[in-house]
Length: 465
Image (cartoon, rainbow, N blue to C red; front, top):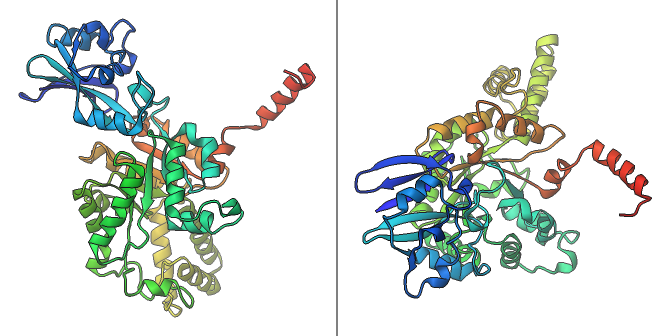
């Protein structure tokens, strides 16, 4: 069998003869000349598959691909997967749905068989989205997702976003129109359509019965389809079923330090991700803050890894300020404030009120140094993003992407935008999904000059078009 698919770097397509393993690269099929289309090969559609084949006959081929296929293929058909995708999403006649890459396989007997492979880099009809960088909504509010739906390739949410920020918030869930999680997720799936992946988190990641977790995941798969659903699995660290109650009562502080988990607890998320992967689920391995989490997280074969950036930068800046204050004054009151802050931010356990001040200083200095807060590579809070992109570049997981999340402020998105267009990371932009509340993304569609020019235009026309 010979397969025509996008190259690993997305810059070209290649024909691979699976019997020999040889591959030759050719130009991107999305930019092929208009005269080089599947229909111009003059192929005969497989009996009973004419309607399905009609959806791809105008798919463009690179000239080199056209020449390679001419004389080699005589018939055209579709895979069972192609049929399942079309029957489920029911796109308009003559089209294929967004979120799928069109793949051409040459089978024995001169059959050109067309497949659809899940890939959110693609819009309808197997055309690449406008940019390699993809955008995602960090929301479960259908009312705020709808205005941004046309630019989104993904959505992420978790129980706090679903319940606290929407379902149980009367200002968001107007008139209590949505009654439960399933209603919310079904509506979001309808709004976003087939082209968007949807990452949903299990309600209780500490459930000991995997069959129950699998049942919940299967419910999401039924609700959103196998092609769109992504299961969010959190890192759990020292938190387990026995002590998670500490986070819900009293001072809500964990008695265990974050760096002293049991081995079983620390790898619970990794093992859960692997089990779900074995059952055919794509996994968003979430709660990733430090670069040192990444290489271990990749062992779980995740579909998404994450860089949470906002709170980490805020905490780094606060520790640096207190450390600099102590260095300038030698006032141990600065270290007491540092210890209190480190307890509040879970660097120390709730019971560490007497933790040695010098040890607190050393720990904080480690984080400030590790994160490069005093260097150009980390002053913007994006050192974890840089690290994770470098790690992905060398990983043997070509379909894994990085979600950059938890953004805030005037500069965080512009700094990420600048990073992804830099020489070092331009080649990795296809591997990045940027997620935020739609309102945060919305602010960067505008600038002050938009207002200035609209004033000029509207005054020129007297307010009339």
